[in-house]
Amino acid sequence: MVVIVALALGLALAIQAWVVKPYQIPSESMEPTLDVGQRVLVNRFLYHFQDPEIDDVVVFHPPAGADGGSQCGVPGGVPENGEPCPEATPERSDQNFIKRIVAGPGDTLSVKNGHPVVNGVEVKDEPFINPCGSAPACNLPKEITIPPDHYFMMGDNRGASDDSRFWGPVPRDWIIGEAFATYWPPNRIGGL
Image 1: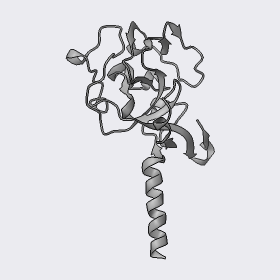
Image 2 (image 1 turned 60 degrees about the horizontal axis):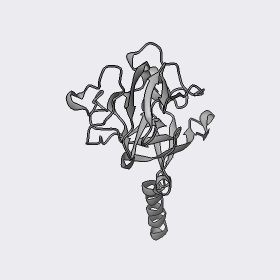
Image 3 (image 1 turned 90 degrees about the vertical axis):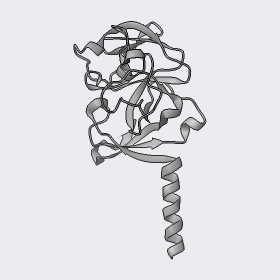
Image 4 (image 1 turned 60 degrees about the vertical axis):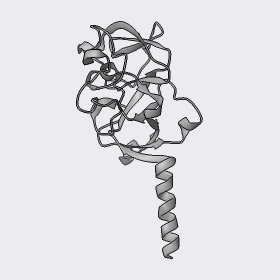
């Protein structure tokens, strides 16, 4: 009996470590898609076989400094006026963030009214986002190019999200996995 319990526990831990892991939403940055305290399941296995895609909701490690406020990786820590942060700090944080991928490697990006402008095309069809308002990061007209193997992340609550606009694109190997389902609270169970 002890062996069966030990095997079951070992299997559960292995699945959580390499395949599917639960996470709790810590902030309002992904509202209305995900609420504070809501719980999601993250596929940690998927990106071993395919690249992340635009619109994927992912859990990742942000750059060092992102969890204590904004920290852009450019000299002096501040991007040019009107420009999203083009480069992350080289070290990653131990914290976990959850955001939506809005641009990938090689894409050009600026921000207009809180919407990403990717390769010159404003992404207006985003029914899942909260309006950005008049915050300075809602309009960043100066275009940047996303570096190879990096992804630009934005929260769905654009006016209240600390994201790649402030701390830069995230390297692919800092991405933990794709959030694919919610399991708590019961009235919010479903896919993403």
